[in-house]
Length: 373
Ligand code: IPM
Ligand code: MG
Image (cartoon, rainbow, N blue to C red):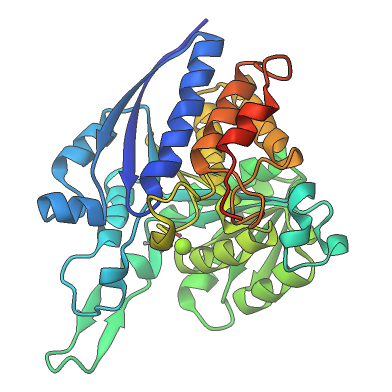
């Protein structure tokens, strides 16, 4: 039976629009192949929204997102704000407010490796084989959302880090459940030797562990965890951590894959769900059709999983795998023989509609191949 779903689309900034366009192509191909109906409503957020409305998150966007079954989001950020500490409005405020408004309290970032990309990873192949972990990052609390102050003379500032038991428990339950479905190991990353909030995290997670007897729980200080992720990433299964540590560790973990452009994420909470690649807006590449759309397309696969469409999600992942194995890759992966963003989107759309290999005309793909070599 086909399903019918409403998807809010936020292209956002930089390469956001062009990578999101590829995901929509792939979702449309899935809808066509499996008999589903996806309706898209585009809305504004980030620098794009500031330019058009003066507001990084217009009310209309919140409204559309609240009335959708899922949100597909591209990227956020513009260099003109990055080096201006005095800017009153910033694109990122839009994303933070959206997370808070929709109570998207858990950010899920799977880290997997691909044989075809091993040579690009800063790690050695023997450290990479079998790396398969997922980061559960708390997303609506902690230092990101605590009280902020700046003194009148502008020379003293503070950001409070606050967590409640309830905020910890709700994401910890999701992380424990994920561990149950995986290799049954959960690592809480904190700084309990220094921070009171971290000691609360540790206490709450220790108390919850008895509800999940088959899951082995261990604890790492964040500085050590940062080191272990590079030394021996295979040891991790589910990593659970607070907002700020999760932000930092998930970028660190992403380069293990070989390209920052590959990693998807899902932000979930009380009903709503937002799917976005973890890469930033990469303004230098915007509009050039060279960005890697796989992080976005794999986020679309997570969106399909969220709709309960596991078979469809798997098909998209197979399509991604297929392009990688056949050398259909963007410039970040092969700077000499690369294909355009839009070509990768088309290839995966064809793949999910079983147009391969009989209808594949390599010479047509070659024609669209970059000649900038
Ligand atoms: C992320 C980003 C955001 C964050 C920024 C854009 C506010 O780095 O999603 O990881 O810090 O959460
Ligand atoms: Mg980040």
